[in-house]
Length: 415
Image (cartoon, rainbow, N blue to C red; front, side, top):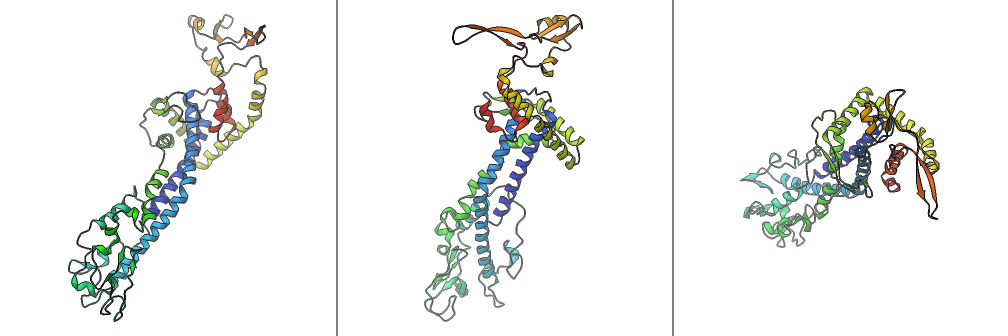
């Protein structure tokens, strides 16, 4: 029980670090990995959304799980203190005449044989700073007491330990020479004094209530499974944060299940190949190296954020006038697909044409007209950009969200 507070503190600290690093990962990917021309592929868009979602989910874990975890940790520490004091008092109760209350083989026990004490005066050891990997030790320690068959039985001569007896005859017990019928509950009712006889297993709560969740320690035990689950790191978060780990070098495909990132997104499972993850990792490490120390990295991220904010007005204008535009200017990403193609290949590539003057393969920039039938049955001509420049509404919206909102998972519904 003494280790529960250390476990809770470590998990909350770990989740806080992960939330901060997921935000940092998202910022660096926007700054150093995302193409400046806005050519966001589905894998990159999904990774950015996933980093954002996991960061928000991790922060929520801290918010929703911290209260119960901290209160339970405090309760466990309180119970542990009650038990430690119980053992401390009983261990100190001994004299030179071989009278004692805690026995070790044929003599009195000492602090070296009791891990919960640090000296012969019964002082408690330092508060544990090392955290356990899990919290199964609480129930297993209680179960060990419940399964003990003989060591909890007091011998006939041990009736002389008045701390363990209330004596209605007045010949022994916790009040010498007095008749006492009131039992004392030690260690938050772990042990109850016996009446006119040495204590036995029946006086130990672990034997009468072998399940700790039914005992007076249940406020420590019954919440532990939920705490471990609530404060557990998300597996996807662990995998994503490897992109920030400079020492990581072995990559595996990252599977992102359908509809696991946002509302109905992605529509199908996305598999980010190991090669792509390595490429992103290399770009991130290069950015961090070029902007070391950490303060310089923060400055670079801030500058990139300010730059994206500056694009907000333009983005809003684009969104506002989107339906009034007859065509869109071709992007570098679209133009790049026609570059370096030979004449024969250029002629068979959709959206590309051979420029005889420059003797180069160029993107088709001439608007194309298409007949559109209105609801009234009349036909009108709609001028659109070349069909080689297909703008997907979802990716445009994603790009707008990336550049203009710090947290945008919920905005995906708008797209």
